[in-house]
Length: 128
Image 1 (cartoon, rainbow, N blue to C red):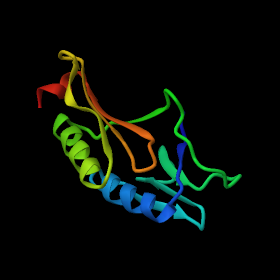
Image 2: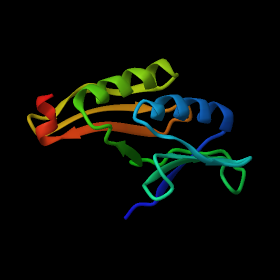
Image 3: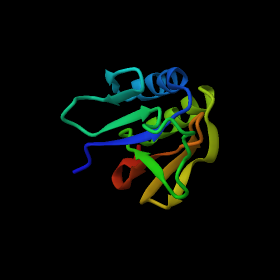
Image 4: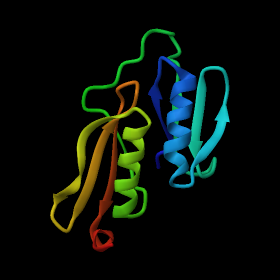
């Protein structure tokens, strides 16, 4: 159902570096780019994440309550993406851990533009 989500950035090159390195950990790459936008995913036919300079060229602003949740496939990858995001200049919004025992494991960060990301794992994958 979701084709792509877009996050605003004030510095496209910095955002591209952050998301190329971060999402490369789960096999995603830059699939499309121009002077104001870059889209990441595993295929043009799967959900993608885009970063862009806002169309009106005003300052980007993270939405209050807006968050992009990424399922990297395992609890270990939640931990790895959290650590990688922090290494790339992201800020902690909640260290990795179980939020609902045996049901939900998650970690939260803000990218360098202040956009909130969650890395998560549901259910049986928590056993890994």
